[in-house]
Image 1 (tube, rainbow, N blue to C red):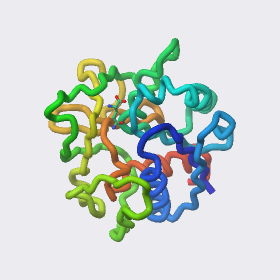
Image 2: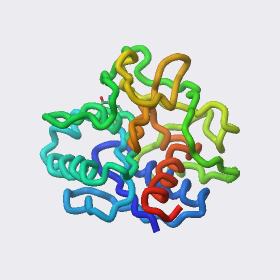
Image 3: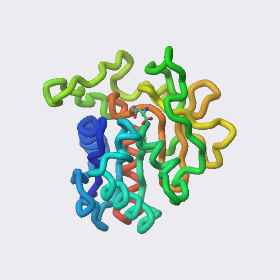
Amino acid sequence: MLRVGLAMLQGARHEHAEALRGAADELGLAVDIVECRRADHVSGDLDALVLPGGESTTMRIASRYESLLAALFGWMDAHPERPVLGTCAGAILLAAPGEDRSPYLAAGIARNAWGRQRESFEAVVEVELDTPASDFKQATPVGRDRFSHQPLEVASSGADLLDEGFPGVFIRAPRFEQGSVNCTAVARVGDEVVGVLDGNKLGVTFHPELTMDRRFHRWLLTQAAESKGVA
Ligand code: GLN
């Protein structure tokens, strides 16, 4: 049983839980999703962590997040080999954790950097990430009725797009400063790097949890199983 911590920071959390369950099904792994709302939920027995998107400023300033953020960073420092997936604002937290913490991703990141007219868009992302393929074609659709808010409908979503493009959903997305990527680029839109891997920390500027292509979540679970020695 893998225990995956899901940081219940402001933002898209329920979709991540759903994506993790879907990915676990596809891999035939048992997963326990631990909703981390308070610092004491971030325990040492978590095998992996997801930092969802949302509004990074809110995440940083809301007093209720202060100790949660510190606990999440503390967990990462204590278990550097365990995988972390940060999406959008989650990637901002990894690349620019703030205060005097050193970044977990060796890549500069700029918030809301696509300009207003392109605040939100979809684009095909080329992914180069070592993740097991899935022949599981009937991924559970994101059920509207299961969420208190309406998830974004993604026209291009479906089962894995045959290892071709990944349906990237960019929502007021940050941008990696292209000259400052000093770790492995694993996702690109054209020449632009939109996903980076540093050790076992993966940061993407889009929202894989809003699609039914679970490969990033499969990556997380596979890495977690490996670092736990159950793979
Ligand atoms: N614009 C947000 C920020 O800077 C990130 C947006 C998102 O996570 N979808 O925090």
